[in-house]
Length: 133
Image 1: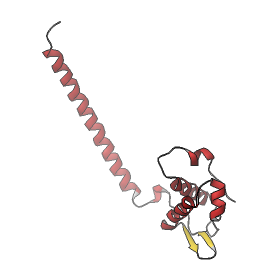
Image 2 (image 1 turned 90 degrees about the horizontal axis):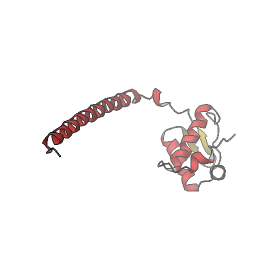
Image 3 (image 1 turned 60 degrees about the horizontal axis):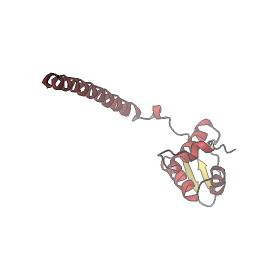
Image 4 (image 1 turned 135 degrees about the horizontal axis):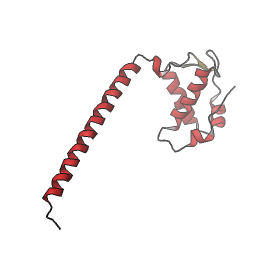
């Protein structure tokens, strides 16, 4: 059974490429079990029709899933779900990347606070240097 994203999800003016949005939707269906491990993905033409996208978009989405090891192609037969994708929290790199983001966020907050203080001092200096009107 093929469940498609809402039209708004795939046709929105998001900066992310359409093939990535399609890959995300298929990945979600696999994760939920709507497309089970060992099951066949819908044909390229069915995906094109269901999602209202070009063959290029479908092929790029399937290529992305294939590069992740989520699906595998069997020449002359079809594309099959090989495994359920890892959730980001299960990824080995997730904790490290999250720590880096937290560190950068803290540094950015400190820098903004410092700039705010410097701006306040400059404004006070300018106010003191102004002749009385």
